[in-house]
Length: 164
Image (cartoon, rainbow, N blue to C red; front, side, top):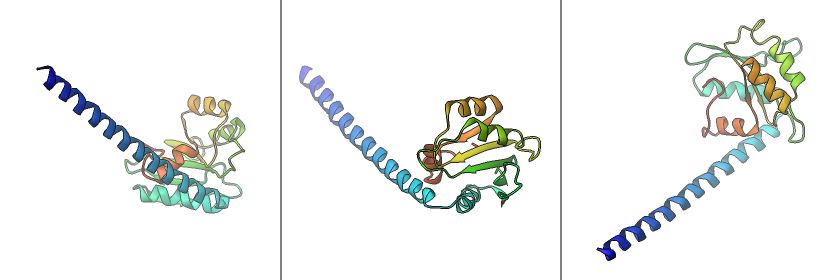
């Protein structure tokens, strides 16, 4: 009886070790893919970044996708209709790794995304990160914030799209 119990415990340890190594390898693969994705977005100029975000929307089932960014865009860079019919308005911020998206950026977007652009889903997507005041503003006003990690996940299909 003791020998059987010892065999079962040993088998469980071996299996657990094997599964842990597989999880680590998969996490490493995901991080590598995400890092490659981010490098591509950092190499783009802001207009190319807007088109890349529009491509991701279309790839993931949105229709009526338009790049509307530019002078006088009132905060909207990409508009689309989600697969479930909701209107999506996205502000794109292609910033370097040391420049954070701040609360003023969110306030400008928040002032127009719902009232002017009719967003049902409002999102800011960046190649950088958000300041804590920006995060607080986004949470308070229902604006979805996609930082560099969330963008990498979306682009590599290892994370959700902003409307999910």
